[in-house]
Length: 118
Image (cartoon, rainbow, N blue to C red; front, side):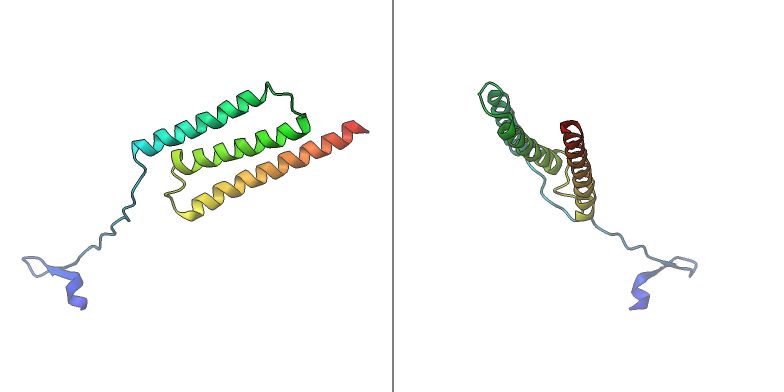
């Protein structure tokens, strides 16, 4: 019980044994996974680049670009920044900051759109 946590030295001095915390082992992605992610990101970028040359209304294409950029950002943050494998509190702090920045940007865009339209 309590004596199990202590070990004796030669001179009879009892020293407390340290408990070593072992980290959880999680499987990280293989190089094949990273190559697949890079290909997916390249394809999304190619679609964005090709969409520039299409005659699409800017009120339609801009939200589509925003959505594709958000998907690319999420993939990069999850895999290349290793947020997928970290504690969820780090992911929550990161996503919270990104959401706050997005809300501020959209608020400023709408504010200036109303201001300059008048």
